[in-house]
Image 1 (cartoon, rainbow, N blue to C red):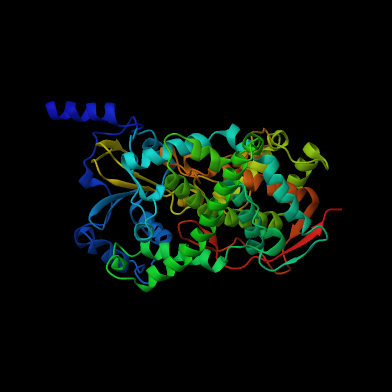
Image 2 (spheres, rainbow, N blue to C red):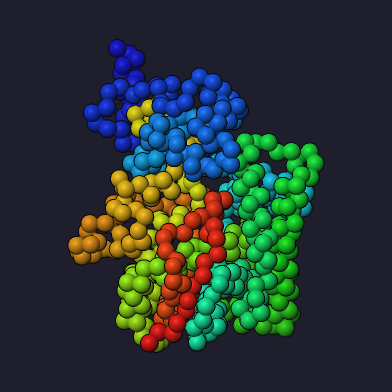
Length: 505
């Protein structure tokens, strides 16, 4: 009787949405998943992957799809020496999001950690946990996640977008759309981070896209290596590849920071500092924060620059491809832009009146989630999730990517339908409306959500509004279908995207 009462109390105090008709809470041992030799620490995952034909050319999203097919929406697996829970249902995800976790943990990326140590850099936010993480995150968050702070950059980014659109005022054929968008994103992210124009739009990107690919390819291989980190003993080919790429990317950011600080010092010496800081200046704001040191500021800006360029250029490529592939959606977007702005400039006020533009971005983040597989949680205390007792320390992977592709949660999930995210009584909207917000969290959730998400959204909104205000985009004849992706820390188009640009009539 006492045991039964304690189980019932556990449901009441620790569970967040256990079904009312559920029997007693079930023990952790009963969570579905591979057992026996497949649950042996370290080698169990490899044996299981081999048994389902996924060990060779291992890709995590395909592996996860097999796991869901075999065991359902709530699965227990042994990965390395830790128990993991795989979650494939938004209702279960919602339970987890309600659990209060004071110091959210992330496993980090080993090759990045090793590079930072060798280069004597301040650790990345992605590789910090506990109080070390909070010390860097809190002041940064104050300056980067407030909508009012971000909106002050609209006029600056609009000028960068104008220069990009000017390149295509007469139309033309673009062989590699992402390479061209990289020029805009590098230039605009440079303005956000360093208040510096790099000259990418006029003279091509200062970033070598090969190095950008290399750094994330090496990171992906490191994550998929099941913890085999030989580069900690000697410089492996993987580490050398990462090191060359990181030196290139961080070198650009490092020079920009030095130049920006010199400009600030010159303005101060000449008595022009107050005038110079009339506009937004993230670098100065971070340097002025009482809890931020110079090396902390350098780390934040370098991470924001490198990650922002990679992820935002890919999201923009996916978005413009789908608008080219769906001319009827492109026309709706253009009609909205024209009705709000006409031929006038894009402002923060006009952006607030463009729900279809924002719906297009939300839908592209659903159709091509920027991070795979989704969100990560490590429990700080025992909890009851989906009717099971889950112990402290269990690591949970929430596969939002798989939820976004599941027709159980989204009508016609493979189609680009921005109307899912509109508040409207339109019959189409009512039929396909997104009713599972826990399935669409492209920037993560809670305290460890993406620190640069508001900047990224603003960059995408401004260039898309500016471009389609004046231009049409279409695909070459014979091009069709959803883009194939490569899955790394951020997803990216697998192949080049070619488009045809014409001036709007």
